[in-house]
Image (cartoon, rainbow, N blue to C red; front, side, top):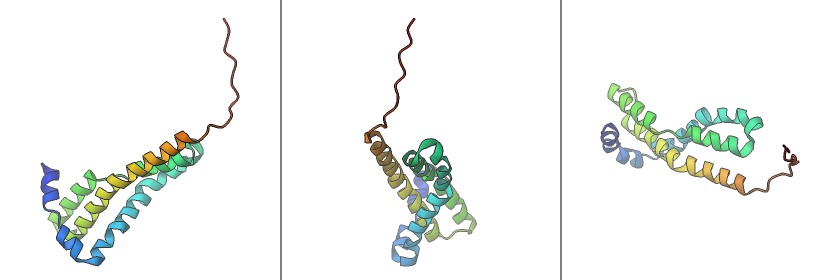
Length: 125
């Protein structure tokens, strides 16, 4: 119920009417990607480039925390309703874009030819 009420009170009109506020959405989306997704690149050596990128995208996906934080921030007067709408919009876009992109990266990785690996002989009993 909390998320339904939060979505109903989202100030979309204020967001759309102000170009500077609307420009915050990609900034917040990029901030999600940097702050939550960038640490996954530490695992490139272990996972490989594409799986590490996919992991970073999946880690950067966030909506419930953003909705709760913006709701609390707007009620306390710390975040304006338009800024809160921009943050929630960025979170919504992260849920729509990042997982689909990650799956595309992983699917492309599955279709890539496997490197030649030496095969071990089957043990005999």
